[in-house]
Image (cartoon, rainbow, N blue to C red; front, top):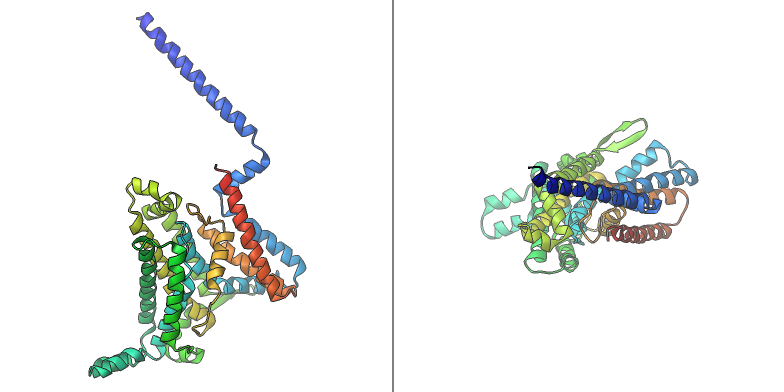
Length: 381
């Protein structure tokens, strides 16, 4: 009996010593990591820390060089100014997480906003004329009158979702690269926007008289001299919801897997095409909702509004720590990235710096952020 147990005991002792040796080697390797390597590993594991550090440092710097920058009114104004950009950045983050990009988010935003504003103030004269030509006077009269604001908000969200789904189908079914697909829809949606609106804006006075509900997100409250609008609260709530969907739901895990390695995700049974279409559709839905927020933020709506929001949203996402190569994203970081851009623009403006240097600063931020992302990616190789 003792002879049979002796080899077993010897093997167990050997395995225990081997495990102890492995732990010793791992501990030795950890101890030999430089401070820079440890910092790189920490920042890669916590991408939100990067924009948080940049935001704190930039606020402190501009607080020293720009007069009145540290006032509650100025800081709350920055949050108000980046509300629309922050919401669009959330939509862009979800798409970039899949290693894609959407250049049409600005056009989708304005189309949804213009449809809501026009239907709430003048109805749908084009449809009214069509039904009148068909001899359907009842339907013609129905579309000739303004619609309730809750109906036009729902309509805008549906239209945004449909446009986002079109982008997703172009990427998945037509196999067009996201950059090219959304560049094409960017021009197409812009043309539709100008055709539909006739390049005419919707005035604030018309919205106030017929659809004050569309202006609700522009209202707000004041705390200790800081003025906040409901649109900014919507930004924070939407960011929390998007974070929960990406980090706490099976759908979010599928999105991460598709962005990290689509082939591997497909082999594990994930329906990659359906996931990608849902991502672009969700981005369109967010753009539709943001159309409502944008009307309240501006107080009116023009077909040429928010022309730079595509680049602004991408800037916020990149600065926020989301990798352009997919697989890693931070919703909170994207919101912070939008605020950082607002801090730089406002701080430089208060410091008396010309506007073209503000654009120069934004460009430098993008270059530094992408270079930093590349540096972090090398940490895992």
